Length: 152
Image (cartoon, rainbow, N blue to C red; front, side, top):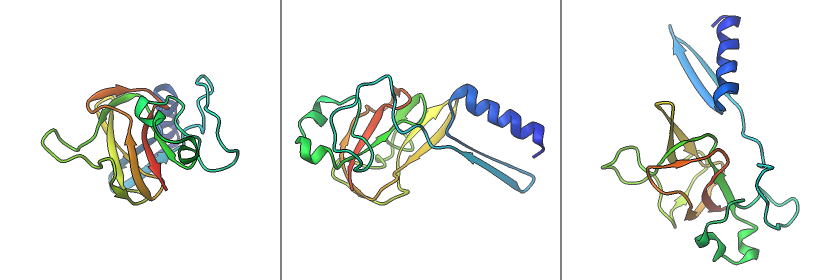
């Protein structure tokens, strides 16, 4: 890729709030990835122990509220890295990638978010157990919306 194409790609990142894109052309592959911000300042954060892992869900679902506060402080929240449609499975007739209670590994695909006709696999950043799935299948999700609670 030339510099002009790379700049155009970076502009798309900014314009659409993308976190990852991969392009392969003529045997050359370019992958650009950025981590989403750690916190969404517009949402109030629940009280948590300082400095212990990622913050718990900022939009607590009723099922997540049922968890004890001391246990919830140790859960890792997987948030939507983009706006799109949440899919629990690779196709309508396939089994979901994960279910509540499943033991998962770091890098394992948890779901797909469709954005601008692109299917983006969302992977776990930790190994552990899926405690709660906070998003509904085939429903829109917002950037930063909590999708999963994982117990490392």
